[in-house]
Image 1 (cartoon, rainbow, N blue to C red):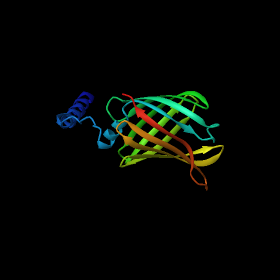
Image 2 (cartoon, helix red, strand yellow):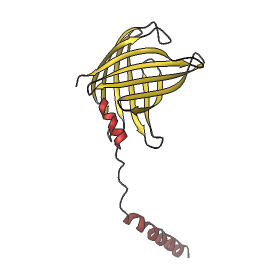
Image 3 (cartoon, rainbow, N blue to C red):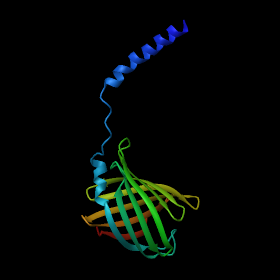
Image 4 (cartoon, rainbow, N blue to C red):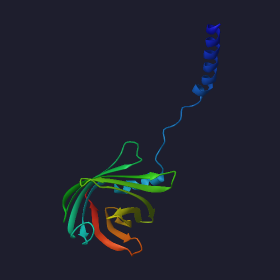
Length: 180
């Protein structure tokens, strides 16, 4: 009796699964135009600029070298950055992408000083704007990082912070140039 019940159950399961197997397999997702827009940044970039005195140190000149490549699949960019500046030398791994559900660009950075930063962004014309909220010394702070494409091989940057109830303060300004 048990064998007959098991055989019937097994037959019913097979009958139920056959239509599923007969359907065309789901296609792999493909990057959309928003993902492809990130392609502007692919390559080797060199940047320079000036940090203003503030929560990130005494201020002064900085340089950076960035290698930017697509992660397999074409949905995310991997950015490896080497920086030299007033606080010393550092390395950062950044990941840029686009969240199709939330309709926003995404940014995550992890650096050699143990910091993690996360932001969301948008692009309007030739200007990318990234925003985030964080706490510094227990106080809520908004950050805004703006990148303006000047040409196919250069862009300017500006990093600003706004303490809770305060106005925007420029922390850093710079320029990056594509070398490859």
